[in-house]
Every structure is written in C-alpha cells, then in structure tokens.
Image 1 (cartoon, protein in one colour):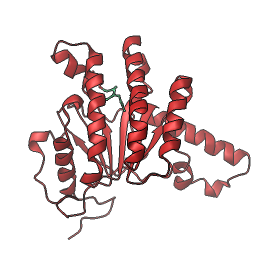
Image 2 (tube, protein in one colour):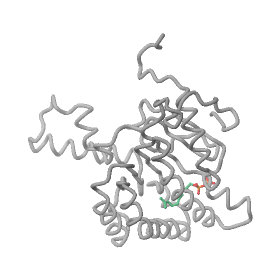
Image 3 (cartoon, helix red, strand yellow):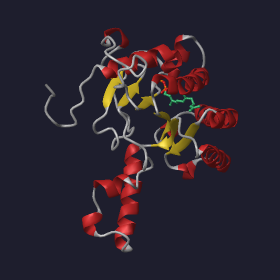
Length: 253
Ligand code: FPP
C-alpha cells in the first residue's frame, strides 16, 4: 500500500515532458459508502457524488497524457447489495450515459462497456449500445466502463468462446494461445493497463482486470472515491513515472 502521503515525488510526467506517464489508467472507485456514512448520509449519496468525480476525472485525462481510462462501476458481486443501492447505481449509469453521450462525442472520447450485459435492463443495454456507436470514431480518450463485470466471469466467457471456435474448426489447437484468449476478452483491442489505482485504502484487486493487469503497477490510496480529485490523479501519474517496470526482465542499468 502506498498511501497518498507516502507517494514518491514526481520524476516526470506527460505534463512535465517526461513522456513516461501511464497511457492506460484503470481505477477501482472504492469508498463511496464510507464517504456517505462518515457524513451521516445514506450510502447512495456517496455514489451520487462518486458519479460527479467520474465526470471530472474523465475530462482531465487527455491533458494528463492518459489515452485510456477504465473504470470499475459495477461488479458481478454488487448485485448482493440492497435493492435500493443497485437501483441507484443503475440509475446513475443511465443518467451518466444520457447526460454525457453528446458531450463526450464532441470531446473526442470513445466509450466502451465491458462486462456481461445480459443481466442489465434492456433500456440500459440500448443506451450503452447507442453511446458506443455514437462515439466509436473517436480517439482522443478511450473510456471503458465496467458494468456487471467480473474478471473471472470475463475469462470464463472468453474460454467458452475459444472452446466453441476450436470445436467448430475456426481455430486449431496450436492457435489456442494467449493472444487467441486475449482476443476473446471484453477488452480485446485495448492495451493492458499501465497503472491500476484503488481508492479508499483497501488493498484488494476484487476481480478487476485479472488477465490484463499481469504487469500493471498498482497504487492504493486512502482517499475515498468521492474525494478523489484531478490533483490526486496527477499525483498517481507522477508516482507511476517514478517506478521501474521490468516485465519480468532484469533491472536496467
Ligand atoms: C464502491 O464503493 C463503488 C461502487 C460499487 C460503485 C461505483 C459507482 C460510481 C462511482 C458511480 C456510477 C458510475 C458511473 C460510471 C457514472 P463502495 O460503495 O463499495 O464503498 P464502501 O467500501 O465505502 O462501502
């Protein structure tokens, strides 16, 4: 765990011209419930403020050199929460899509959704498809929102597709390699995250991008998601720039 107060000083960032900032940042937006409880408010109030943070962070990414941003909005396990909380989260997603589709489209943001959509309402599925289609030609920022997403579920679905392709002769056994499985993930076509941030002080991965984060750097900050500011993202990027990534090789001299 590297809480904010112990983060290393900036070495270089896209902004300072170093060019070694993370191109792909993925965030586990945790701590909404605690943020609200600390203020004597219902948990859903934390999610509402959390959705505002999403808007700000998305807008800030291009200027910070982040080309890909992936956000964990609703996990396959989040259905276990109260009906009120699930309905609120689904409502916030709908509202986000309705309010942001045109804006993000104008700002050059391409939006994709990952996760199993089958359990989502038809209305939400339609809105998601419309947002993806409306923004598919954009390239300034690639925003991926994980909804009803679980990494184990994603890997199992990809494995099922691979097995079907093998059984039906579209793929030989020799071709069933890492690339073939990766191409069947929800994230096919996206680069792996360079940096995974989790807010709120929890130091778990919680079934997020298990396949894709094999070589990602992790940063855990105590800041609760509703308090996570553009400044915090800037700090996280600076912290990343100071790390040496070896991808299994030996240290550079
Ligand atoms: C985790 O905090 C957060 C979530 C399960 C939901 C995240 C959703 C949003 C930020 C808003 C909607 C998203 C978009 C993209 C508009 P928690 O509730 O588990 O916090 P706790 O650990 O303090 O209880």
